[in-house]
Structure formats: C-alpha cells, structure tokens
Length: 69
Image 1 (tube, helix red, strand yellow):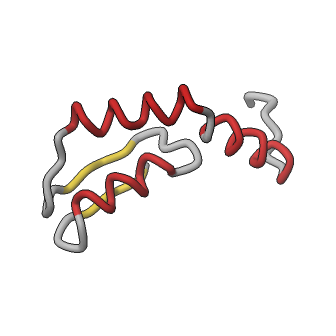
Image 2 (tube, rainbow, N blue to C red):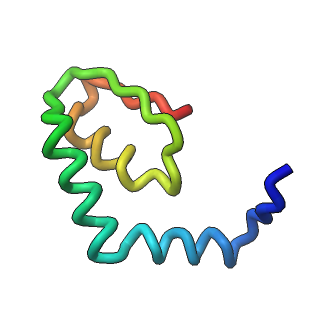
C-alpha cells in the first residue's frame, strides 16, 4: 500500500501541476520526438491525468488508437 489517497482535492492538485508551463513543454517535446502519424496505435503506460493521451489521440486520429494501461 502506497499511502496515497485519491480525493477530488488530490486530483485537482495533480491537474494543476500537469498544466504548468514546464510540464506542458515536456509533453510537447515528447510528442515531437514520438513523431506520431494518423493510424498509429500507441500504448501509454502510467498515463497520469491523461493530457498526453488526449494529445496522442488527436494526432493518431480515429484510424489509430491509444491504449491506456
């Protein structure tokens, strides 16, 4: 047991962190380096609040897929 408690307040803090300038820049660089194209299938392990998954899904489009684990 990790001792983490998942509450609405904790979720809001995590979301606020993931929307900081540094984390947004990191996410953008990750997407740039992945160089995804429409139709690709992607496995995202450790998705966090899902902002990266959302961006990946937009890039691969309805022909592709994002699987979250």
